[in-house]
Amino acid sequence: MTRLTPALAAALVLASPAFAQQAAIGIDEALVIVRANGMAVVAKLEHEHEKGVSKWEAEGLDAAGKKLEIEINAVDGKVISIK
Image (tube, rainbow, N blue to C red; front, side, top):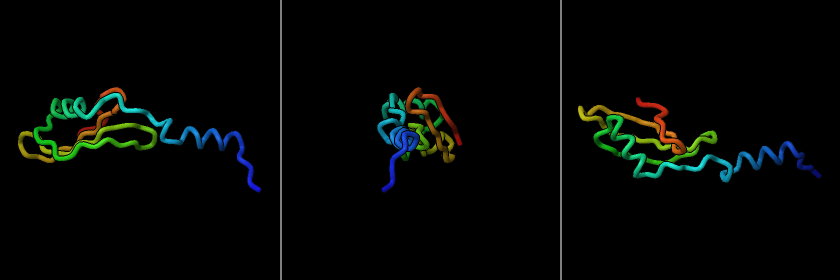
């Protein structure tokens, strides 16, 4: 029989979705942030958890029609990246 060690148990609990960062920035706030950072047309805005980080990912176009991708930290609203 396999035994669950305390270290493995702790790792499993900390890796569970309940312990992932929870979004404090809602979709409306995320939309304001992406528009303030140059996105004129928002084609896609979705919330994701990646490696324990809660974030918003937006895809769309700037005012000149150029493709734009923006990632926002969903906990504090800071822009992670603009491509």
